[in-house]
Amino acid sequence: MKTTLFVLCLICATAALGQSVGASSISNQPQMVQFYSHPEHAAQLPMAQEQSLLIPSAYTHARGERPLWEFAPAWLDVPLGDTARLLRKEHAAAKKSDTVWVNY
View 1 (tube, rainbow, N blue to C red):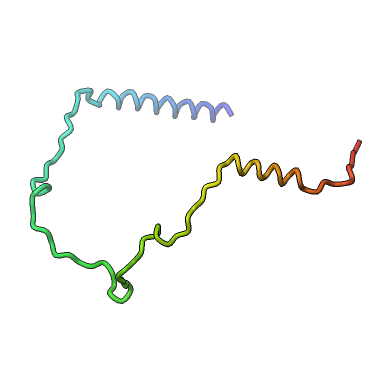
View 2 (cartoon, rainbow, N blue to C red; view 1 turned 60 degrees about the vertical axis):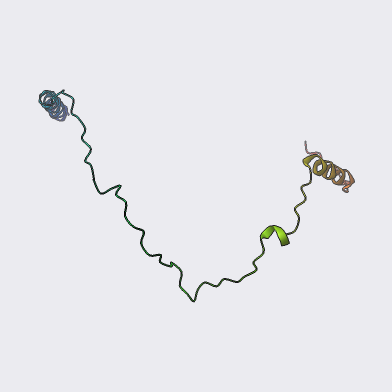
């Protein structure tokens, strides 16, 4: 047990000594960051010919398409208060149990 503890302390001391020696070799002078320029990055070039991404047999287009708002059913929003009143009436009108169990 003592030997293991001694070896562990020796390894930790060696690592700490290595960090302190290695840290002194790092320069604390600031390094300027240089960004490389690409002169052709923003050059103006003529546009290429258009290319279709669709397979001709997989896509069909028909004239006279109607937007959704023309034939979709009208959505009627029911206020939350009206919904709560309706549920309260249904709960009051529901059949109650005749037997009440009381467990002691």
